[in-house]
Length: 288
Image (tube, rainbow, N blue to C red; front, top):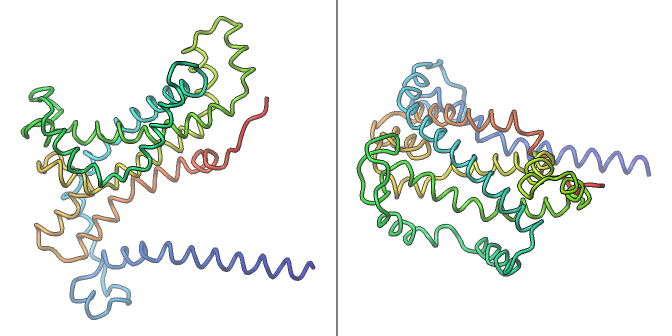
């Protein structure tokens, strides 16, 4: 029995290692290609580069840094908006009784069934008809309606990200013992006070999970920015790094270097938030 258990454990470890290799292999090849010329890629694809070319990373950095800053600025606003509105709405659905509560929540759940690509054309038309906001400031220039303005890369993600966020937060808040909220109300806390002092401190892992998922989804999205934004000054990384490779007619190496540089923010997010991310995914409930 002990020997069979050891064999099963060894097979499981081997399988996980194999999955790890398949997961990391594309990134390793990206690192290799980022130091190769087109001739080396075509003739010695699997070999190590014959020489290191740090200028590829320098060129890529100067070309995509503006796009990365735009993505990080937009993402910070989107994450803050999604986390705050999702937590408030989730708390309301979990702890406050109001008319139409269940139908409203079922309607929100139904939105999870709608593919995002299905709303692409209606969203484009909708934001094209919205009035201009903000004038000539950080919101951006040009465009008709909100197209080609920074808000068109912020509002849709906040609005769409709440659907899953509300479901996630509502499920988590329902697991918090009711006695904690009753004790807060006995001490004189208002409904918002109970949300702020009881629900939020206990929900840090789930909110961190939501923040990471929102940040990654917004940072990696390609379709909506390519449709709604044509101003290169306000374009985001996912589209900008493609423009860097296409418009410059460059070798594949500099473009791959751009992908490597662009992945650094996501690596840092997971490095510092992995603890809360895993805890938020695996947390099953709380005990009074």
